[in-house]
Length: 474
Image (cartoon, rainbow, N blue to C red; front, side, top):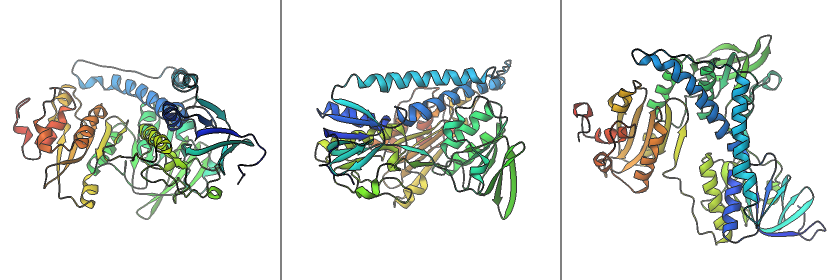
């Protein structure tokens, strides 16, 4: 490792932040507000995953596909016929790119000028004694935060490198929509992009080793699979990947299920099999920073790594890979680095969302997790055909599931599968944060003809038959 007393430049800061994405900016801004002088080191496009290749571009394209589907599904109302199609795919992608560019400029590049105590540097950073080196230049600081994010993970499928494949990043950069597509991986990215491309006109096959959204309640996972199938997506679950190959018409993927092999064919292959931490150039081993078996940086509840003075936050830690949790963890890391490690990471009431249609959202414990934690569990499920909002919308796809402690009635978790259901999950976050009981949730006043009213019905469903209640009764 380079020595702090070498002859390279000795710029000194209170804090070095490695990574200029959402987590890195959160840490740098927090530290600046604490009065610290900060070196923010970026490598690659400023802004990181979310604004450039993740949340913003994907949700823009997903919303566009929803507009297509909404027109086509208008016939669920008597007397209405609708139709929509993509006239210019390149224009749609350009529209997405313009939004990304604008947000990157406004929320990242332009912000740098607002903080005089933040110096932005570019280059691959490597940990060193007393700081880091960047392209041969030594930058000194007693405290360092690593927030270098993650990239798409590539599964070890034989023949994959020769076949060619798309990732969640390159799929959103295509100049033309594929005619057919095999999506490998049934997590939230796989489900979102499989439905988006299917609605855009591609023939899509979604393959996964387990079930869709493995961390979701099984009732929600199974229902989502049915809804995707109803839209023409072929969902293949519980299989293994044997080999990939390039064909005259595109690509093939051989899968194995129940001891039988089958070869699938499509124009393109899209991999959505998780993400890996960006740590290759950091010199973690030489610096004595421990990593997990998946390569992510190990941290404790105060975001500290195994090396004193070095912290990590965001996707590079492998935990809670959502942009808001990355920013939250980085904020805590900055405060701990500057204020005696007094802040603890808390995710018991963390909300998460999958932007399929219907949307999936959850917070707290699942039924299986609650049982594993030793609770005497009770559950309540409210199908959306019991929610007046869904009936009025002529769209009853979905359900709401609540998990509670049968001994104390305290709510432990919830998941929602509903069109625009994600906007309702924050009610559960607050209920969990303030230790509400199912009875209290069921007694709370909710506005009529809203999706969130379904939470009230689900809460009442623990001890009532909600089918025997009149509108707004109870």
